[in-house]
Image (tube, rainbow, N blue to C red; front, top):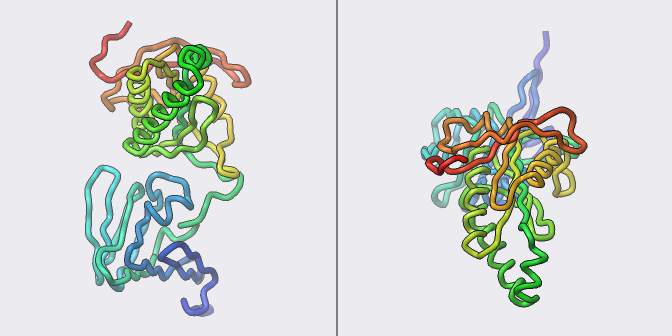
Amino acid sequence: MSVEAKTFEQPDETVTFDRGRVHIVTVGSMTIGHEVAEPGWRWSEHVKPIVGTEWCEFHHAMYVLSGRMRVLMRDGETHDIVAGQVVDITPGHDAWVVGDEPVTSIDLQGVVGWARAPELGERVLTTVLFTDIVGSTVAAERLGDAGWKRLLATHQEDARSLLAHHRGRLVNTMGDGLVATFDAPARAVRCAIDLAAAADRLGIAIRAGVHTGEVEFADGDLRGVAVHLAARIMDAADPGAIFVSGTTHEMTMGAGIEFVDRGTRAFKGISGQRSVYEARLGGEPAQ
């Protein structure tokens, strides 16, 4: 038998981020953290840009030593946690310090890998959205350079606003389109529907493709078969239409979105036949 003892003053590892830090020790099979979050700290402002997910997807168990923290869950519920409490927080949340006192805690679970960017090649499950403007060359010729530039700027402003509303993360812009990721497939589909409606009000049409699968984050971009499939699905969509994969369709059942079966298709570079559905807001007539 043996005894292993360590202190947070001499941790095995220290993870730092803006307005916060975690000293980490491992004893036996347990990895424990001593976390300090300074006043003004908020996960969505100071950790989200590091990890690239819309919500904190770690399951935390902690004993709060000092301060007050507010936790916002993905479903909209909020909870205040205070000193002296033992707290369990499920994945899918934001959190921030309330008041002028730092929040300190002993993190019993959810500290391994927390507040660190995905490693090169690490695969994560996400929903990918591709969009593109249909007939952009014709529209640019019709409007002229200045007019097209103004319209494109307005479209991009609409896109940024809608991505924020639906909690999407802009990954890249490509020509007249964009690539974004979402933590929930229903949000991605609704965002695509709203983007198509906003484009229609501007007198243009977009096509969109949505797929849910594992991707790799690398150098600020996405890689993987799931990314290629989302792009291929977008290419197959009609002007103004949002096409989604069978995977996304299954994961959004019951979310108030209407789907029209568009059959199975073979996509270049993707093995096998894939089911494709057109997404519409519930209540719109199917054809």
